[in-house]
Image (cartoon, rainbow, N blue to C red):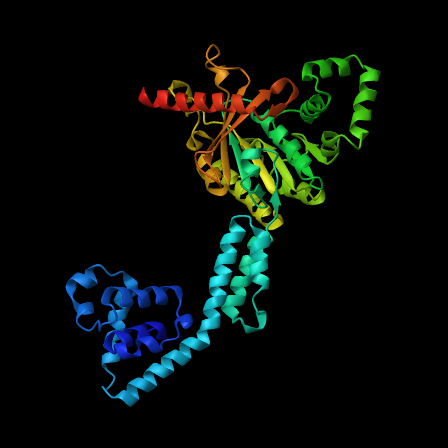
Length: 435
């Protein structure tokens, strides 16, 4: 029995000791019980009250422990000298623990702050603790809190995420959606914006579906603000002047996008086969962020392809946890999803190939939704939504963007456009629910 409960049980039997307890030595629960004793009984003995059925029915486990403690205290001979000795011994024992309790409370509060990305405040609290006085268990907890406080955080240049503290190192982000809904485009945009927002970060784009030259062209398209088809035409025509302009732009130290592109490595279908190859490249280039387009194209020896892909996904997640990097996986929808038959065309996480394992391992699962593909006459063709099916911040998170896929660029809407987009998506979801 915890000495605190013994002490509190003792004063329910012998109220004269109540005012002799140093209040500061009690834990949070102990103080709550002590106040309960005062408020409910106005300082009177609980001897009769506490054993009444109506009282015990309303007690939680903390108060039931009092009953258990009373049984032990009753075994003490009703002798003032013995009771005084027991009381003093319990107080001495608790006073020895009082610093320990204050450390635990401080560390617990620091952990809460760290989890909310308030790392400076968390470390300030931790540093206020006298390390030499902490027992082993508190020391371990302190290391745990420090690991929270020292966790890498990255900006994304998406205000809806950055205002909540950004992305944590170790986070996996899954982007799912139907074919033709710009999953590759938005992932490349997110990669470039990540590198702009984190000026020392490096990235790798693993493209398993298309030649890596396609991704290169789209990145140049974004930088030159010229559509991909025009760039391809200039390349085919061997437009030397255009090539010089691209080269000059990439060397421009004032151009943030050029700087980001110079920190980006693009790997094509023949450059890697599986997660093992990816991890080697990530370590080789010391990358902080990577994108895989897309999961089910990974290759390897296997008896069961489902098990193989689950194992590959878990291997990538372990690498993220170890290196505190950020990963983005693009996932196609199952052929059996039958989303085209639904009223609501926003996919769910279980519509994705291997959606269960991806949702389990991911900090964020975003479904892409471009409504103009289905409702051309009723919605602006530039409206683009990332609908969170899982989010570290809130489950109903919907990121609104204005898309220009011709130059691989997604901007945040103006305030007035944001209100219109918000209203449209809410009405859409409600309307489809009623059908």
